[in-house]
Amino acid sequence: MVHAFIMVKTAAGKSEGLLAEIGDLESVADAHIVAGNYDIIAEVDASEVYEVLQAVSSSMRGLDGVTETKTYIAMG
Image (spheres, rainbow, N blue to C red):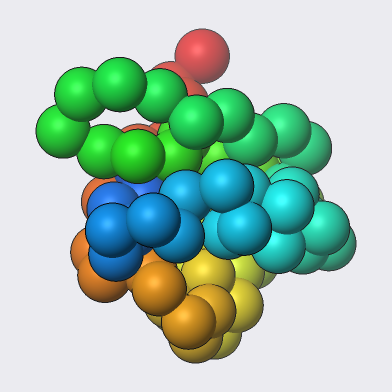
């Protein structure tokens, strides 16, 4: 099992709507609006790293209002 944290920057005023959309994605276990350099942190669980990357590149980055993502794979 691969557990990853996806940091998401959003366009102004889009965080709340995107939180719901990101939370509804199949591999997303949880998502939160946060203060700091990023607007949303999503936790993704997948069986392989490829599935994490696919969720980010195909699903999250395709959402209207997502301007940047950064992926961190949990090591333990």
